[in-house]
Image (cartoon, rainbow, N blue to C red; front, side, top):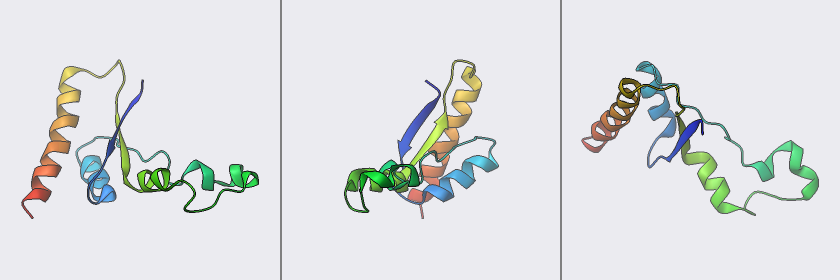
Length: 91
């Protein structure tokens, strides 16, 4: 395993920026659903064919997760996400 993916209820890009400011490399790996990518055009899929995939591609973000992370790093990642959530609940 190398990533931990969250579904964001809110502005994913804002969360990504917030984490970046805190040194957490959160990534968006599939901003375009696979069935809409050029490599799969020959299959004839269109927007709307896989609505769940399309929705998730707009709302997921992946946090770093690997065997080399130390406890302090994991706590920093977790606390940063929780700080963002709490900050946005109060707005």
